[in-house]
Every structure is written in structure tokens, then in C-alpha cells.
Image (cartoon, one colour):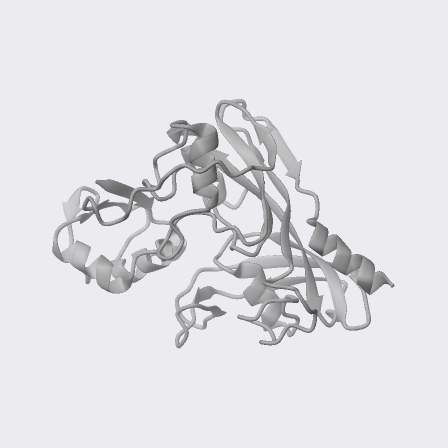
Length: 305
């Protein structure tokens, strides 16, 4: 059986367990989770619970997915741009148009397929067979640095750093218009959009606390080159936050204009440039920089004239 183990953060306290799990594991629908609860495949602190259970801080939630619910995931010989690698982890520079892990409609040509070929059986298993080694993820059209763990101890150490927001994550993006302030802080709880399940949104009730710091690097006639640093790491955080202040990312058809003003650009201009963390074995701080992709630098050169 595929198994998930989750530890409830203080900010998620008092959420119904089906809602909490649907936010934590978006690949599982609310109806699928309710069925798993009814069949006794989900326990809290080793006790069976009902769908009406309200989670508490430090609850340990175990989810067992019955076998044969998902297809086998095969390794694929897909080239990886590796920024760093050792016996515990590797940092990869993910290209545009690559899904991080398999899900409905994307069971091949993902980063996980490539990792399984490169690392063989040396990937952490905490997040189950569909997401071996994956501690955090970035969107299909977002490029840049991503850390992957080769064993469960490294995975747990990195997951703890993510939970306390001690990992450095600085992104580069191009936005519509230019923020009034050269530097700013955007704060707003992010949760599932009340009407469109594909989208996230700043919500007045529920959601998770989210903070993004931004700095304008260059300003052009219609756009701006911006650095965003994550204090938290929520789904679509930068895309939602920048759109909320009237400056959606160039190419982001979900949160910005449906028609992209730049011909041939597919997906948001967002790049995870800097990733820093304490090494799980040595404790030393390590920081990695993923160079901007070619399409991104070409856009900047065009705007600079």
C-alpha cells in the first residue's frame, strides 16, 4: 500500500480532516478522501476517525492507499540539469513544461520518471510511490532549483526546515506593470478558490498564512523584472500574491490576462533562482543558484531594447 504520513501544523488546527487532507494532498479528491475515511484507511494518532474529525496541532495522520489505485511509474532516461548531488540529496534545475511528479494525465515524462532512472532505488519513500524523493514542488511552467532527497532521514530533515520556513527561496519573475514601491511585503491567507478548483486565492476565512517579499529589479514600459522571496511556501503563492496587487505574472493565463501579449510564450515567467538550506547530515548551510532559462533572458533583452 502507498502510505502518507502528515503532522498537523498549528496554523491548520480546527480544520475538518477531509478539508485539511484535500489541501495537503491535492491529487486526492474530497470524495476519494471521504471514501478512505469511511473504509478506515485514515487514522489519527493510530486511531480510526470520522470525516467530521477536527484536526489538532501535532496530530499524526496516516493515510493508506489500497494497492492498484494508481498505475506503475516507470523510470525514463530523461536528461537532468543537476546543480549538486551527494549521497543524501540532489538539487536539480527543472526545465519549463515539466511536471514534477506523476498525477492524473501525467504518468510519464515527469521529473520523478527522470529521477527514478538517475537514482535507481535511492529515493526517499515518505511521500509514496508517486512522489519518491519529492519534498516540495514547483509548477509545470515554473523553472529552477528543486531539492530531491535520496533517503527518509534527509527527507524528514528538509521537511522540518520547510515547516518552520527556514529554507531560502528566491524567485525571479516578470510582471505586468510596475509596483509603486520598489520593495514590498504581501500578506494574505491562501486557500482553494471558492468557485474554481484549479485556482488558489486570498481568502478571508480558512486557508494558510502566506507572506511574499518582493523587490523591483528593473522597470520597462509595460512590465517589470521582480525578485520575490518566500517567507512561506503555499501553492501558487507568488502568482496569487502578485496578481492580488494588480501585477500578475507575464504569461500567467490563470491569474492574469487570458491572452498573453508576448507571442510564443506559454505559461508564467517564474524562475526559482536561489535555494538554500541546512544539509541534513552535516548541518552546514548550502545555497544554490539556478541560471535563468534562455527564454527568460531573451525576454529581458527584448524589454531592455
